[in-house]
Length: 415
Image 1 (tube, rainbow, N blue to C red):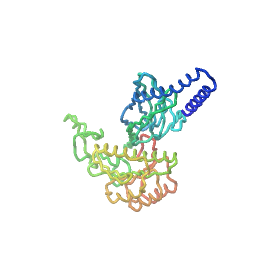
Image 2 (cartoon, helix red, strand yellow; image 1 turned 180 degrees about the horizontal axis):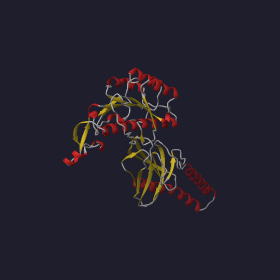
Image 3 (cartoon, rainbow, N blue to C red; image 1 turned 30 degrees about the horizontal axis):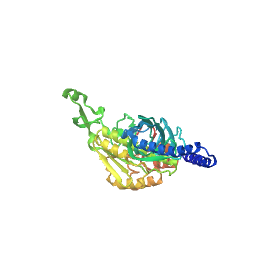
Image 4 (cartoon, rainbow, N blue to C red; image 1 turned 90 degrees about the vertical axis):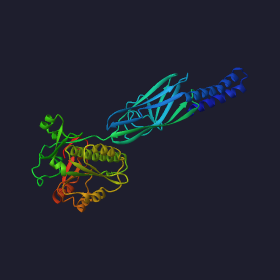
């Protein structure tokens, strides 16, 4: 735009000088045209400014991780003149399939670059007279959480590229990316006695014995259906397991993973926090499906949280709560969470401690709380960040912890 103004100023100066040098009727006419054209161009731009309408659809987006979803911007020109160019400024993310020229705030073309976060971008398009135009963007986010796609400015330029007007918007599209729902593998093994059970497998919650019968509830496993009685009564009857009455589990989730503020480290922080969250949800879902209760303990930005789920309907609340946890490392050490809630653990509790990093600080917290030498405690970590050999040897030789490594990217895993 600057170059157009400079060019037009130079041209006007030259024509003005020529009016004094050459005694010609054409020069004053040319100078008059150069004076009137910007005014006409500005008036047309002003009318176009009030004739443009912008709408974003949908108003709210809910999608899964890595799932592509579309955002459509609808522009409408109700004036007889075309509008070109139009610059839409907002916070966008992934433009791999965007049907428009996409540049960052500095004017650099982004091409097919894929980004993790939303940042300021400029969309450029144009509008024919009396018509509508749509800009379709396809997004795909690798981390769960709540995001906001914002559109806050639209710039309209005149035909001569000498003027521009800014139109402000406050369009916000709330975007919720859901965690992946993983599934623990069923080992199919049954424990003979409580003393022989490692209590570190989800199957430790199961038993062939049952103490009562009840009607089917949403989320109940089909393994617990009493088929003969269901056929007689013409309704689904569930066998209430003996262990389901008394047994429950406690899950400690570590969201304090922090490798630094560099871009690649922030990526790993989010990946590991999601892995912890999705593993905790998967174990919780399986335990609730088997008719047992489960207590989840985790740290939010400000507080340490505890939630006891006693029936499958409670899983939805926990899923929503975990989805909304901010994608930032928690400042309090994970050991503080264990120290806070470990006194509430009962003898019959099966315990899962899910953490991406096993270090001396965590092991000391487990020792101080008495969990390191207690049976039925599983220490779940991820193969991406395999613990050092010395730590593994210490866990195997000096503690009763059941160390489990799983693949954070796998949909199913063994626990």
